[in-house]
Image 1 (cartoon, each protein chain N blue to C red):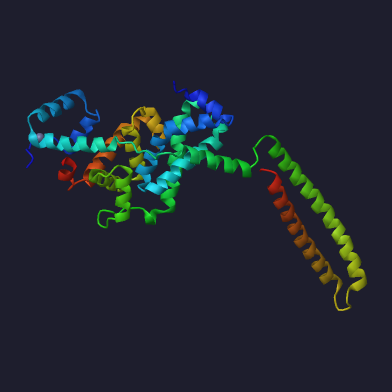
Image 2: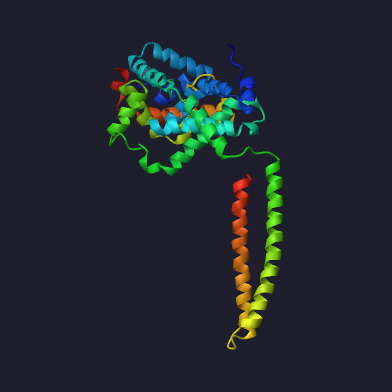
Length: 155
Length: 184
Ligand SMILES: [Zn+2]
C-alpha cells in the first residue's frame, strides 16, 4: 500500500519530465530517496521511457524509394512555367473551337431542317431540338479536348 | 564524411540519386518510427515511410528553407499517417488488449526483435489519441527541440510540456496491470 505522504503518480511523472517548480521537485526527490514503493513506480516509469526511446529500422528502403521515384518521373512530365501557360492557351483554343463548331453545326443543322423537316414538326420544336443537340455536341467536344489536353499538358 | 543536409537537399532538388539515398538513410529510422508509433502496423508503416520520402522529393521545390527539412519531412509523414488512420479506423488495433491479434503481435515482435514489453507499450500507445502518440514519439526521439515538436504536432511551444505530461500520464494509466511485466 502507498503511504499517505506519497506524491501522486502524476507528480512523479511531471518530475521526470522536469515540469515541477524547484521546491516541489526537491520534495519529490527527497521522498524518492527512502520510499521503496515510489522507487518501484519510478523503475516502471524508466522501463516505459526506455521503450519509448527505441527507434525502429525499416531496413533497406533506399533502392525502393528511388525506383518508385523514377517510375513516377517517367509517367509525369516535369512541371515548369510552360505548363500553366500551355494550359491557358489550351483552354482558349478549346473555347474558340467550340464557338466556331457551334456556329458551323447550327448552320448545317438549319440546312438539314430546311430540307428534311416533316410537316408535323412545328418551328418551335425544331429550334428546341437544334439547341439541345448543339449543347450536347459542345459538351462532348469540350470533354474530348480536355482529355487530350490533360494527356499532353501537366495542369 | 560530414552530413551536410543543406547540400544534400540542394543536390536532391537537381535529381542527384546519391544525395537522395543519403537523405533516406539518414532519416528513415525517424520516419519509420513516427509511422510505426502512429499506425502500429509494420506493412502500413513501411508504406508510409516510403511514401513520405517520395512525396518529399517530389515537392522539394516547395521547401524554401533546407534547414527546415527535418520538420517538413516529419509533417509529411504525420499527414500521411493521419490520412491512413482516418481511412482505416476499423482495421486498427485499438482493442488489442481484449482481443489480441496474433498476426499483429507477431509483426510487432518481428519489428523490434521480439520483446513482450514492446508489444505492451505499443498496444497502450494505440489507445491514445494520434496527437499524443506523435508527441511522445518526437519527445523520446532524440534531438528535437520543443519548437520543432510544436511545429510538427501543431500546437504552441508553450503547450508542448503540458500536453506531453498529460499524454505520458494517460499512457501510464493504460499500462495499469502490466507493471510486473514491465519490470521483469
Ligand atoms: Zn512514496
